[in-house]
Image (tube, rainbow, N blue to C red):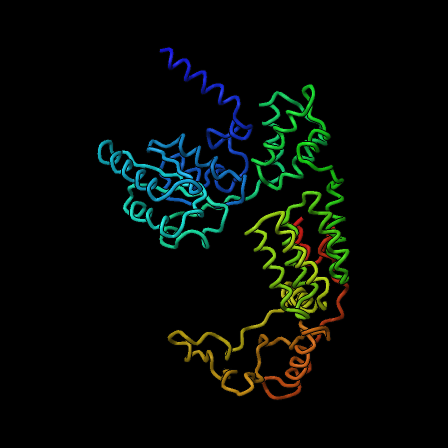
Length: 465
């Protein structure tokens, strides 16, 4: 009896001494913050967990998004045996022991076993292969958690037998909700500016923000967390970066790169990183800029921007600042052209305004039975049959005057593209000189980083802000 009392007291003391993030770990789906697309009412993962019918799955997402939290909720809601391993410390021997226990549970008690394997990407191919037979025959239900892309890090046979659940970084509202919960648990209050600073620097990582809050609470006196406490906990000063600053700095960043000033581009990049701006947002802006402002003047620019975004996912900050900086310098020093962007904007405008035409008969699909009777494909000329790889024929819709949406500039690589386009515009499908009905000279396109615009690009970019 005394041993039970001592054990209970020890457990309670450990609970009180546990990190704030561990103390606030949810015990039900309703307590989970964020990930509404997975655990919201009626969502697939919620239904599977509530019915205790979750099959093998991989929880994939950035750090601090709730992968282990979801596994904890599964553990509390399932009637199956729940085993835990970390790929950081476990090996094939540990996996085989779990499998043997799972066989015993299934044979003696008719109970299945769920194995939660944290950091599954740390397992080698052979270690992952050791799991496959037991997953395949149902001896265990595997739940793997990883921060890495499972298409790269998880063996295809194991991945194909698992459902992938992608967890997203927590939005600001979810982060603030976590902060408020943490303050209640610590029996503290905090100045609004202190909460804002914590939320701004969280980077969508729930565990990180709770760890920083716990340190700030320890530094605070007597029961109110100030912005100075948060600065001390974060080890950095609060750089003014409110909502207006966000738009202004991003605007300056884009315009500096568009204006071919690499030094200014690097400065505004540093300003955003120091202010805790979401690095993924920065990477997205660079990808958009690569096509909108550099375009065909340097086709390699898009490759560089996408590579920087992928590098960010692989290595994270602070190291990924190098990849972002390289992309900024490349884009800033590249020749510039917005002609491909203007082309799609004008083409979509025409379509929206009712400039519609039929697909010419010779371009229609001719691969099904009866197509020939309808004349589909009749007269189509296969460009590869010509030594030049190009033959003049009609590609525009029937009944619509030919229009030149793409008018190459003379900058960079696009100069060569212009020569090819000008040469080919001299012929049409009937061999007569082309007289393209060019659209009126467009107004200056709206900037992608300005608030509230009405032009087509802003419809897409508004979600980026």
